[in-house]
Length: 116
Image (cartoon, rainbow, N blue to C red; front, side):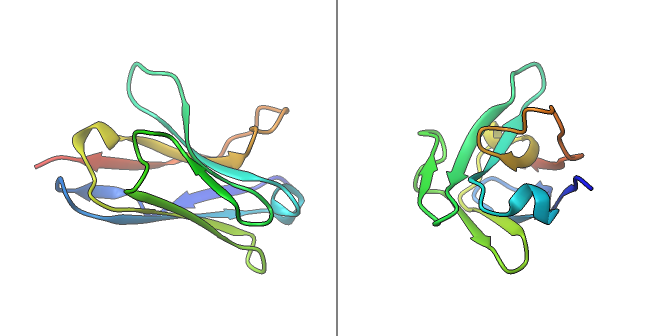
């Protein structure tokens, strides 16, 4: 069964922090590169951070130095630590494989709103 369950979003003031979690079914997570994506209103979904099965990471320029992606292979979970949040980080955040699943499957996402 395919499962991607994102959590940890919320409303935070500029400069604040959030930690997102994504629990994936083993069939999705096992031995795959994973990524966190986001979609802001009126914009296309974009990759913000990726992590290989060996935990090598890469980041979009817009979040480099502020976001940290990590994974716990024993728990089939991927995390996104977000620091120094800015209003332009406001979006629905999703996790998926990287590249994303060819079936087009996505979880429900978690809303992050950065506002004073």
